[in-house]
Length: 112
Length: 113
Image 1 (spheres, chains in turn blue, purple):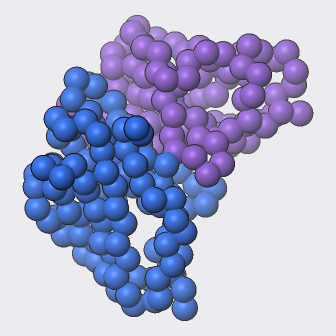
Image 2 (cartoon, chains in turn brown, yellow; image 1 turned 135 degrees about the horizontal axis):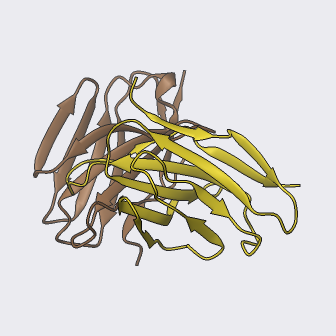
């Protein structure tokens, strides 16, 4: 079983819609969760961090964490073509110091 | 501006040659990391360092070597023992607190001539 799993996509949504990206993780004691956006040929860029159960909103982005079910999600409201990218979920597993385990990413395509 | 600088942006390696990728940060971060990314795949950890003069192997360290003589610098050498070096190499840094995210440089794309 992969430690951090994401659907590779592509996930296609129309412009203006809500994009929902999901991630599950295997280490129950994980405490820190991050979403990175990676445009094709570029390096990952941090867009959200979440540490507690519930929702965390930042502009058009909302991260949701459910530790009991071991999933973290990212919602993008009013999706724009510029949101088209691969979104990487990263988890800080217990006992891992400050290492992160990354999922393979979900490709999002926002269509006009 | 604070950040992480990787150089060169593109690098070509000949058979039997060692090449070194540079990573410098001015964020005053204690921890630094090297990842490899292959097309359509996630990031795989090569080496990491949490303090000067100390580093640990990641998941795919074979064929690579690193040094950490200064807090700001964490160069990666891709040796001739790495038979499939073509990939996108990413350097990252973070504070030493577990709750803090990693921040990435712009990457180096390595290809075989």
